[in-house]
Length: 364
Image (cartoon, rainbow, N blue to C red; front, side):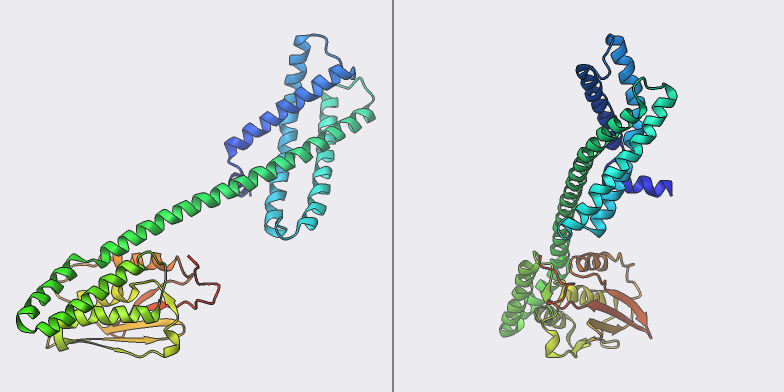
């Protein structure tokens, strides 16, 4: 219980700053009270030593009093920020917070006055001291509550700005990794080798190859700054990518697409299909004796890509970087994540699709 309370307070205002604030408030209040009492003649000072003694005694009493006021104030602010935020329920919040702050101040002032009187009895009438201290505590707590409100609001804004900056750095890193992974040197090397062979044998097909190759990298450059693209555009890119792969593997590599036209406007991270298709080709045998067929279909707002497992014997262990990167990119546009499973000797990738009109889609 106590640990959770400390964590909540530390989330609102860091502990070190809160302690310094409590001590600063205590010293400031005592200086104001002592000077006012001396100038008004209510409690005049005898000498400088008397001033120091009263200041020390007052601070020792005010620090626990300030703690008893500030901690509940912060917890009240935290609760009100969740239940009655300023931007939606101003009057309701004021009607709760103002009386609560006054009641808390009066209760603590009574407790502190009784404690101080027990330690050293007041020479003034106790009722007058109660009234005077209640007024002082009430005024101080109204000011403190305002300061705490502003402080918590500032911290929340600073934390939001920090998270936004971290998210932007993360997004920049994701974009860089995505671009770096898509301009795959092995893919480019193999594609150029195929192109070199076509130029000598079939100029027309070589021209088609160059057109598809340019479409791939144009799409990469156009979408690398975008968190999402439509399924229609992604399929156009996938067709170009698959065309180049089929130039290398021929009829040993094939695919089927079974999707409705109404799905083409749904969103997913750009190059998602390329990651899944590349993994299928990279980790499975693709030859005349074991041709590889890839099916692309759909489930409930999910793109389903599957292929029979026929792993390469000499294949190195997968690092999973591409799939992890894809999952991170999904977090920018959806609260759902892609799923990768093995079922009935088939590897199945399920990529969530996002309706651009839903709250789940991104405006970035």
